[in-house]
Length: 140
Image 1: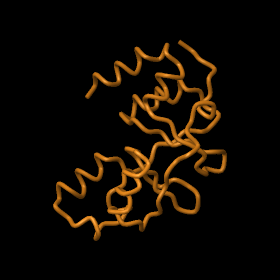
Image 2 (image 1 turned 180 degrees about the vertical axis):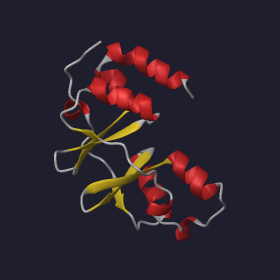
Image 3 (image 1 turned 120 degrees about the horizontal axis):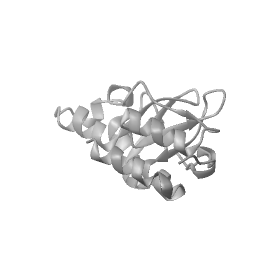
Image 4 (image 1 turned 45 degrees about the horizontal axis):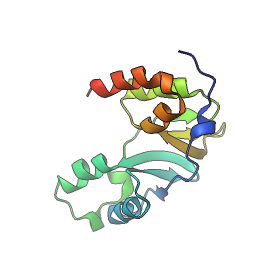
């Protein structure tokens, strides 16, 4: 099932980011404006966490905390799983499956954010990885 397609060839470079102190209400506004289900949190150009819709629902809404009083670092998922831009899509798919994640930030050799892929990107880019991604989806 080996593939030579690299994550940098399929990644989205238009990644929406916020910093650690961004108010969650603003994070939600950015998600809505750009139709994103995940926003990366960065510090000095390097990803430190990720906020998904699920994170907001579980850590903020369900806790009944006013969204204007919560900042990004209070709800983001950390530690963050990332992959090097020169890794293959197959390596990315295995990492996503092992960590049970749908979004994978892409970094350069210095650890700076350069893009992101999601589970749909993997399936569209390398259809022969569909069985692996199907197994990933069944684990839930």
